Length: 181
Image 1: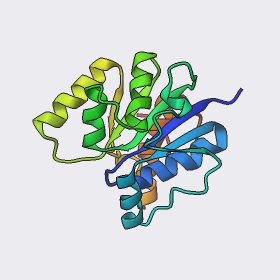
Image 2: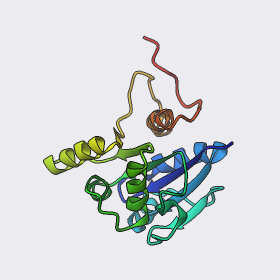
Image 3: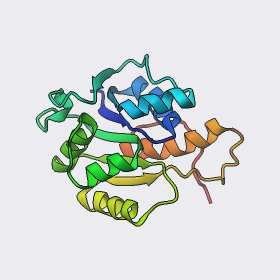
Image 4: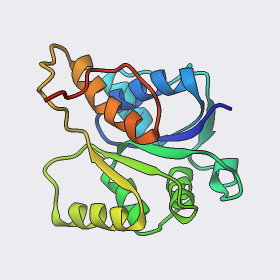
């Protein structure tokens, strides 16, 4: 049985991380994609295409979508990239759109929720919201690639971050190499 995931894409720079994650996930799993309006704008600015995947696309305004209900089962959710606005909504239970509602469902149903933060510097509010999200059960990851693998391209850096997201989702992949000491 194929795993099933929800991927939310929100309005932070780094939409390239979502694109790479979707390239890997959609080959191995059933994927629901929700893209915020600001994420679409940033994708256009950054030259990243988020369309055309073999996935189920849902509008962020559709709070009646199946993934908005705890009775609809899926394995995990990743918000990549996760804007500070979405982090604030998730960490405070403010589920006013489908991405925030699906994240809220993950937390209440004790499903894995990964938030890939792409922001710097971080304010005290950001840090408090990250701590609150962690305390609620989310895994907070920062898009901070390692350099021990000697990356040569931006794609190498992206793969290193996406590999960690895939690891936490329990998805097999061949992105990058693992630390061997």
